[in-house]
Length: 259
Image 1 (spheres, rainbow, N blue to C red):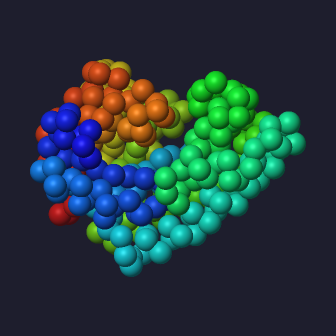
Image 2: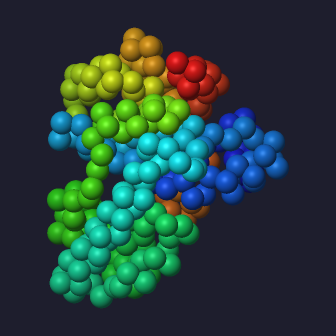
């Protein structure tokens, strides 16, 4: 939150994977710094065989239709981590669950933290190397994980007052025609937005996704996808330096909340 204030942001969201555990602490810090705070979560979902990351904004801790599924998803993460570690051990990488967990500051533990443990042990030099060599989809230590379907995630999000948004669409590994078709299908189900403004998107793609969102009548959102100073090169508010999320992204997001 202090980094967001230093970047002179007006709004900031926290969307950890599969958990709302940090929301109350982040909200308190944001309030003390004069920031408008938006609670949320990030999910991995499936849509007709395509893996998608979905942000759900305005999701609060406590009871709710989607909140009740998060514990199940975290348990699925735990089981998956055990299987990945067993695969790595079989490949000669001697790490334990304890080695992995110390790299996570909360209950959501996943492949990035496994990669961090491999770095600490000296097996690889960077987190990205862990993904390119071992942990990517289909990699030698990869294990499939439990996912909600996109349709189910959208339904549960909307039922709990949340706004579901497709995160960084460039990672969907689809052609523009195919992901446009997917967006149409999901918008009909209640999708609230597309993350158009993201560090992985070039200027042309940001403009294209903004246009797609406008045609669908949903929000063109954005974010720096900051994961911590030592985790990747995306800085809060500016990504790699060229990211500018317009105020309209926030306005459209709030409009979707009031649908």
